[in-house]
Length: 161
Image (cartoon, rainbow, N blue to C red; front, side):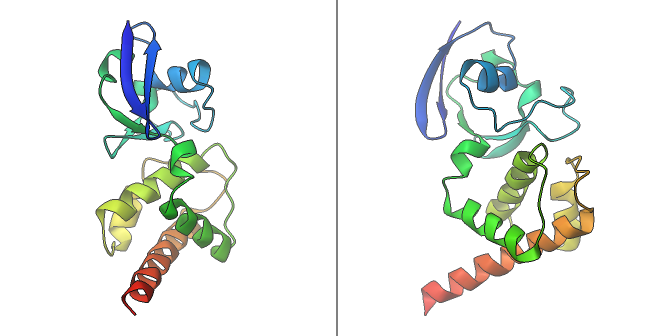
C-alpha cells in the first residue's frame, strides 16, 4: 500500500503494509528514532507524536490511517521556536530527562502550549498524565511547564514593547 502524508513539514510517500504501526514506520522505515517504542499499548507516552496537531500514541496508529495527515515528530518539533522555549525552561529549572520519556514529555508540553494561554495546575497535570517518567518527580515537570509559560509570556510582552 502506498501512503502519502506530511512528515515534519515535508511531503512523504511510503510503501508499507496497511496494518504496520506508525511507530515502526518512523523508526524502522524512515530512521526517525526520537519517537521511542515503549509499552506498545498507548499507556507510557514514549511514542507520542502530533497528528494534525493532536497528541497521539504512534504505537496505536496503523498505516492505513496516515494518508493525508500532518505528522510532527520530536525531530521536526525540535526545529521550532516553541521547542527552544521548552528547552530553556528545562535548563532554568535544572530538570533533565533520560531521553526515553523526553520526546513524549516535550510534545505533551508543546500541545498544552498551543492549546492553553495560562494553564491551571490541574490542566498541567492532565497534560502530563499520559507520561511514565521515572527520571523526575512529577512536581519538577509541573515547575518546568509553569516556567515555559513564563518564558512565553515574557517573549510575547517583549514583542509588544
